[in-house]
Length: 114
Length: 482
Image (cartoon, rainbow over all chains, first blue to last red; front, side, top):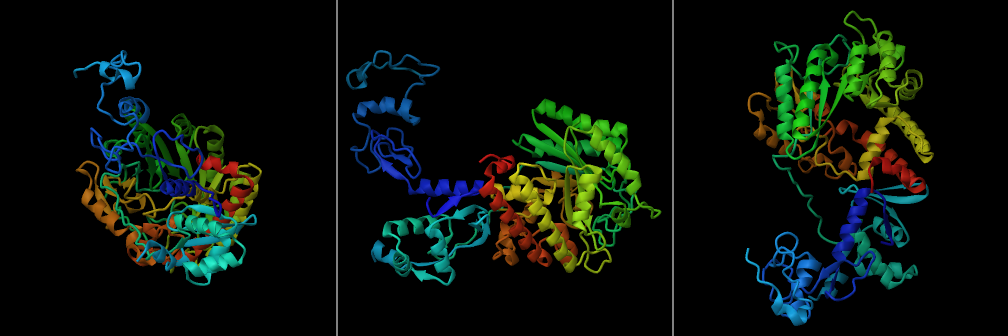
């Protein structure tokens, strides 16, 4: 902010919220800009919790991760989105061992029974 | 109507804030959020223009463009000032009236371990003409059983809160030292079992301190507040034994021993200001330089204005002048990273630094409750065994949730119409319930008799805060990290 400078702790919170609300929509592959005023709202995912997330925020598929096979890894490794995939930390650490490249090998991921 | 047209027709007016200047910088204290901003560049111009009256958006922009600013700068500034509520272009907003959940976790109980006292101070709110507690016919001393039930209530009602606190109070607390000791031991055992962190404090007139008690306080890291009103002459004019003798010469050697032997927690002096005892600087010097306290806090006696000892408005103005001088002394120390023991200013600075915005004047009834000798739960230690603001019994069902809920609903700042336009409400929120009850007959009344004083004092503290924030901001880290 240029016309006012946050001084106490509450002011810093108010500023944080104000800047966050200005926000910015960016596609997943875009390099995220650093610095104040650039809060990252991912455009590639649906923003409501609908397991399956077949459509993006606009109701189409154009904004989904591309290629869409990458959704699998982008979501459960990169985004922290609770994707419906096996738990790779404890119960199925090697379920994607045979899948070196998702675009080519996605059929080789293991089937894991809960 | 298009969005553009709507925007152009917006009318801007000043938001709610208190402006103040310190170290050559202009600041805004925002109400009701309690945030503090320094004004820079065009921000000042915008607020000056709107101070003269509301303006249409386009008229405001035109005036700023005439001053030589660029349109993009102007738009960014208007957005920023709107975001922090320094200017407003909508309908007046209603303040939210959020009564906390019934399950607000308890943080502190104040145990009035006795209603007896070996002193007969003129202004005492337990024994003076203005008393609201009704000790007659009740047990004079709290039993270990009741004290332990109070501790159990604290543990149970504190929910997920880890840090909890027991304050011992009276009467004269140390008249019931055995129960205080057993309660500390009981609470510590319970804390060890449950994984909570427990702290203790007590308030005392210091007459009964001896080596054994001091060592106990030190070993258990018990914070101590000593009631003392200044040098011999001032102190003895109010704080006397039942036969009229002053207590100064009895307590001072004991206090010095306490300050020497007890090094594990803070020991502060608490001064009650009355008609004859209002020379704040003299008292502060005496307590810190001659007796050796690191910290001293001052508060006027709660009294009906007709009492002889009541401190009238004129004396209170003089007290504000003296507070101001001490606050500036505090500021000068802070700029050199030195400690200053005037706790009235450090307590306020801490609140200003965090940006507190109080829904309630204090924690009474919310995170804090008082318990009387027989186990009755009251709003705070000043309301135990009183005819009003009762909230249950430690052994009979604990907190009376209905009474607590009703109290919190009727005492919320949103329900205090008198306070709704005051810029000091984020820190004051209407003031002490006990003071309101004595002066205005109701705990829910705002303390309108000291509004000017409170605004004056908060303005002083804001200026001290602004100066420290500008010239030595690192000092403020001691009030909590940013």
